[in-house]
Image (cartoon, rainbow, N blue to C red; front, top):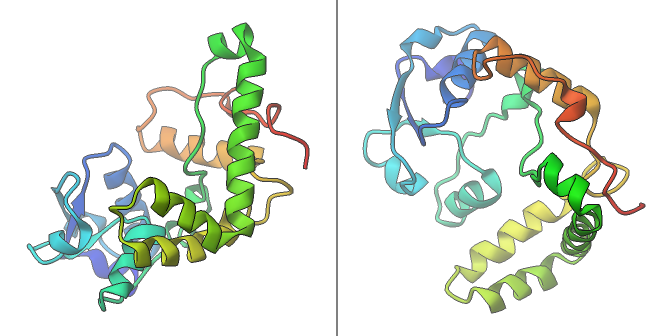
Length: 204
């Protein structure tokens, strides 16, 4: 399979998330395929490579770990990026989450925490090999080759095209939240401006 239209007649292995089927249908339809011909099976948290050997044709993976692991094990993949088929699917992940009560009661804590996370990601972005070693020291049971190769792939993407690590654009939240509502993943429309903030990020 080299494009979403190829998913028709195939079996997708998912984790049971509310976003999965709407996303699949969006991709297949955008590429001219029949989304109703995609079979969806819940495989939970089963290992990706193991699942594909048990009747699953494709999955939605995090390339920075599962994709890198597949290549290291001699199983190169055909990757399709969801954002290439619908601009609304160019969303932020992972994100840091807090709530209004915490922000109002202890904004200094939120700011300090965000600064610490920013420092870690910025260091990892500039020092791929060293940050991989730090992770391996803390979690020695991990596959060292995978950790190093994963970090090599991820490091330039931590900040990507943002002016500083963590800075988010209003258009991304607007487009994605509108898509979620249209797909009935959200039961009501939200104000994207109230869903995120850059106010607690350290200066660039």
